[in-house]
Image 1 (cartoon, helix red, strand yellow):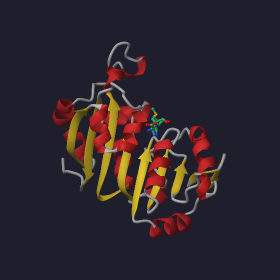
Image 2 (cartoon, protein in one colour):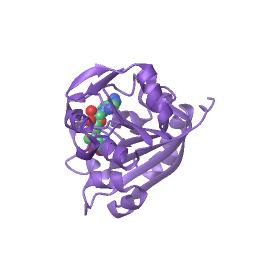
Image 3 (cartoon, helix red, strand yellow):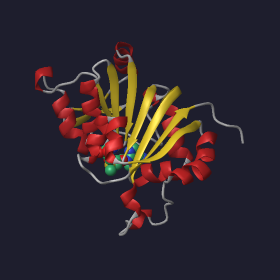
Image 4 (spheres, protein in one colour):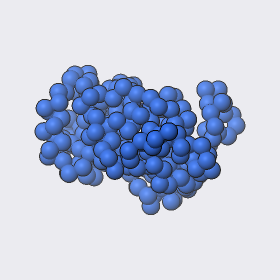
Length: 221
Ligand SMILES: C[S@@+](CC[C@H](N)C(=O)[O-])C[C@H]1O[C@@H](n2cnc3c(N)ncnc32)[C@H](O)[C@@H]1O
């Protein structure tokens, strides 16, 4: 699969990844990782985990990729892999690998796919998950307040009611059972996971929709 090797793209084969996997107690995949700073922070906090950041916009991950290759005393981490890919077409090496998935503040195809429960995006997330893995999705609700960006004007707002009444059946058909769908303040986010909360910025007034689902066998139609 295509991974960041410092400031350029290279390849990582299944054997190399497998060795990292075997040395790790847990695998987390941060889907739509952006600049990969949250993935990097988690990798530093959890040296015994394998943390994988995935995003097609690989150039934004370069500063984090460069930093992660330094000596440990200078910020280097050996348990972070940054992959250039879209989740609709996950690299084969990642299939069935994740104990935990994050989708933090998605946009574009990733946002639409999650909010609408589309088969390509939610099926891709399911493909990289182990049975019983969790996915945590956070979306700032202010994107649905005026002025609403043109590209999401037709997108239903992700609310606890929408998750329960519309999304849960779509996700169940793709192998995800929703276990939590709540509006949370940034203070409450801090309690859920300080690493993600820092992504919002301290003191942010943003109310965030937090959705958690667990990977289960797909429901029959
Ligand atoms: C607003 S950024 C959030 C980045 C990061 N999660 C954070 O919280 O800082 C959304 C990211 O989703 C990525 N994205 C959009 N569509 C995607 C897809 N189909 N598969 C994977 N990532 C995608 C974008 O490239 C972008 O980097």
